[in-house]
Image: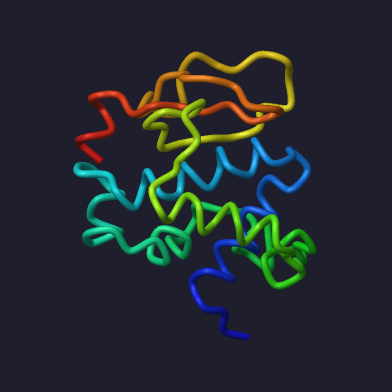
Length: 147
C-alpha cells in the first residue's frame, strides 16, 4: 500500500514515538526534518535538497519502516499504524518549519532503555543534546560531516 508523504510521516512518528506523547512525537518529527535540511554529510546526500520522504525511506534508519526484523515479522511498523489528527498536526507543523526547540539541530535519536543517555551516538557522529521522554537526541559532530 502506497501512502503519500504526509501520511507516511504521520504513521512513522506514531510508530516511533507514539508512546512518548506530543513532545516525544514532535522531537522525532523534528529530527526527520533536520535530516532533510542537513547541509552536509549522509543526510544531505540522501535528501537531495530537502526530500523528507527520501529521509523516511532511507534503508536501515527506522525500525518502523521494516516489516521484518531479524528474520521475524515486526508488528510495530508503519503499515499497522492508524494516525489521528494529532499526528497530522505534528507533521504539518514541523514541515512548516516549526521544529521542536528541545532537540535543536539533532540528527539522531534512540531509546537506550536506561535512565542515562550515552554521551555519544554510536560511531561518535553525534553528541548528546537532550533527552525527551525515553529517547536521547544527538547533535552532529564534525565526524558526521565526513559520512
